[in-house]
Every structure is written in structure tokens, then in C-alpha cells.
Length: 438
Image 1 (cartoon, rainbow, N blue to C red):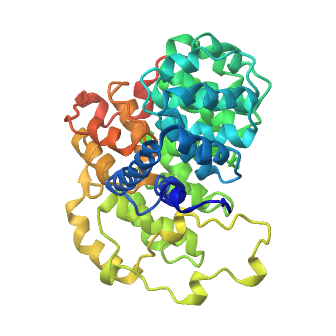
Image 2 (tube, rainbow, N blue to C red):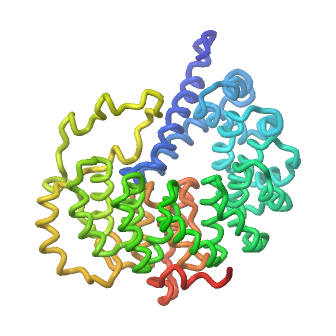
Image 3 (tube, rainbow, N blue to C red):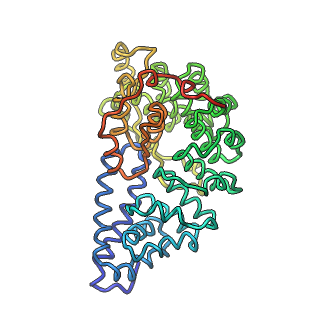
């Protein structure tokens, strides 16, 4: 990367490159179908060790390596350099200055560094930034405030009315930290936004605010078989209404929506879904079969290992050449790491195990759903499933247990140490139980 590096800079150079590698790996872990919170915590500790190594060099390393790295086209490298610079008092103003003068690419990378920044004065520094920031910088700031639960202040309402869908969606997410700033009626037009990002963020905020309109919009999207309605499906699956689950089951027969539907149904915890998944996991569409296997395991607790895991040959695992999209993003999807169930073995297991399950109950990894079971799942579930489960924890605890699943893993572990207790009536209540206003 730096052709003029001499022997004296090699150690710092390695800290920077290794830190960038770990940063990229950590972002993949946070969306992984097999890695857990403990895996993320381990990677974070390794990343922090390399950042500490960069700090030892002080101003010289900042000038020689870190500042030039901010101009690179590698997002993980920019984020790593910014993380180290933000921990040096003399460099903070320069890094934050990129929000006013940098590129959209730099703003996106800097956002990731700010989300993990350990400075105690960062909230105040972000609040003091001018309102005239470029849209991509406004998005970065709002996303950091949303993730960290900070008040976006007077900048929130103008952002909600922005002509930029990205700014509006980020403002909707930031509003969850201070919902009193937003009146539910303000959400009504945003629930019908042509921007999927805005609509999904409005749905999430609407449910958090107790808006019945948000629930009705979820039901409309599913009834209309609207593309891009995965978030609406998730809310209905968590809600537990029999009519909503029937509507989601119907979507498993719609080619364009079936994968999103089976993903959502995996959070329902219902025996009826587990039994339907026995047939789905035999499907010719391998992605759908894998998602069905995941849903079955999430409900029943059966680990798809050993005899219960189907061995795939190379032809099954590969995409046929005629189906390849040469312009597609080649980054592996989380579904690719999912196991496919050995359907016959799993069906035989279920024939015996079914006796332990109540058809009227709800289950998570084979255990009757409860606050302790949900908390345990947030400690042990694969990372990509935790994002939905954390939303449910916030809902059912009425906001007393708010876990942001994209914050540093060490912070999340600390938040999960103390036992959770929800009101008994809220543990199994349908979604409408938490909604009281239009």
C-alpha cells in the first residue's frame, strides 16, 4: 500500500492492515448465520489490540499512516484509521471535519468508526455539528445517534421532512431514542413511502410508538403480496395472531416472497410452522430448503449436525452457469452458510419429539417462550437472528430492555448479564396488545 515504507514503519503498517482485515471480518460476523456474540467479542478484542498498537506511535504514525489511509478506497481501512485517530485528542477535529468536507464514501466508512468510538464527549461533538452537512454526512450522524441511543436534538424533525429518503430513514431510526419528539400522525404518510428503507423504518418506529396504523400497514403489505415486505412479515410473525400466520404461510407459495416468508415464520415459534417446514426442507430450491431448515431448528431446538445435516454435492452447492448474474454482488450471503436438513432423519426425529410440544404454545430453540429464554437466545443465537429478537425484547419489555445488536459485542454482553423480567401478560401477548393509538 505504501511503497516507501522503511523498516521502522513495518510494525505500524501491519497493525493498520491487520486492523482493517479484522474490521471487515467483524462486519461479516454481525450478519452471519453461524457466528455468535462470543465470536464477535473475540474479534473485537483482536481489533482493539491493533488499534492500541497504532496509538503507541502517536503523532508520527498518525501523520505517516493514518491520515493518508483516510483517502483510501477501502472502507475497512478508512474505518480502522479513523478509529485510531478519534482516540487522539489532537486528531479528533480533523476526523470530524470529514463530515463537512469529505466524500460520501468517507462518510459511510467514518460512520462505522463513530459507532464504536469510545470518546465520552462524542455525543456532544456530534450534536454541535452544523445543520448544513451534506446529506450523506447527516445520514452518518443520525445513524450513529440511533445506534447509540443519543438524542438527535433539533436536527431530528427537519431530517424527517427531508427530500432525501436516506436522511428520512436515518431520522426515523434515530427517533426511537427519543420517541416523544415524534407524533404518531407524522408517520402516516411515511408508512406509504415508495422508499422501502423509509417505509421499513416508519413501521419499526410506529410499532415502538404503539401505532395501530403501523400494524395495519404490515397486514396490508402481506395481503397485497408486496415485494420488499420482509420487515412487515417479521412483525406479523412476532405478533402471533393466527390470521397473520395464515397469511404468512400463504406467501410461502409465492415464488418471489417465499424465502422472506419462511425466514419470518422461523420467529413465530409455532408447532404448525415447524411441521410445514418438514415439507419445505425437501424443496428443490436449495435456498428455500435451507431457510426452512433454519426455521425448524429455531423452533424445535434440533441442531442440524451429524445425521440430521444433509451433505451437499458440488452440483447442488453451485449456481448453474445459465442462472448466474454477471453483475451480481459476489459477497457470500448469510444463507450460504446455513445447513440443509436431512429431511428423512429430521422427520423421524420429529415423530418422537412432537409429543413434548403444545400446539398452542410458542417455542424458541425447543423451550417454551419466556423472558429468560429470549435473553439466553440473545446471548447464543447466530448474529443475524439476534437483530429481530432484540426488537421483540424491546417490544415485550415495553422499552425497558433495549438492546442494540450492532453495538460492540462487549457492551452487549454486559447488558445481558442482569436477568430480565417482563410482565407475564406481555410475554405471550399478540402484537396488538402493545398498540394503543392510531
